[in-house]
Image 1 (spheres, rainbow, N blue to C red):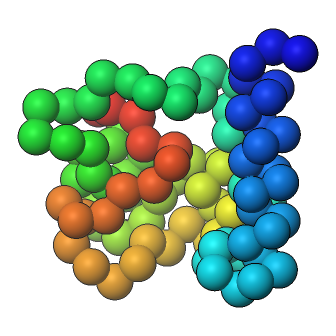
Image 2 (image 1 turned 90 degrees about the horizontal axis):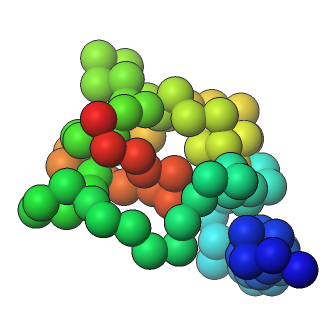
Length: 93
């Protein structure tokens, strides 16, 4: 089994377990794209919604289809500043 499939399987198992305990917070399935890397270089100073290519700052939302799926079909981000929020689907601008 390749490493992406293994990570996806682990993420799904993690999602199910945490959803059952109520600690995960997602409203939909946790899915990662095939290009996801478990460790990657981020923008100097760190990653956040503020420097993510998927952010819709005007609407305080995320346009990433995986985030929207995980959030029950809604792209709305948590009510905190964009520079202090980040998701598993962050990608640099």
